[in-house]
Image (tube, rainbow, N blue to C red; front, top):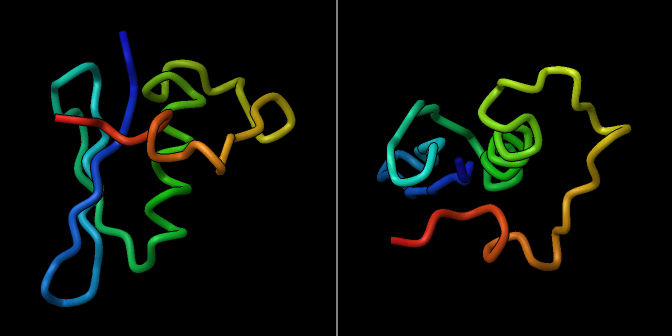
Length: 75
């Protein structure tokens, strides 16, 4: 199973974050900034769709230089 996220900018300035399991939208959340959206996606990926709640920031270091390639769902 592959976990990624998809971001869509909304007219009101918020960002819709779709948390994906493979090509299926598993959850949809609204973020108020790009950094908040990225954080939601990073947690989703690191914790493998919230199935590995034992994974924390002590165990996972996100690769922000390659964020789009590693963490964003590509249609």
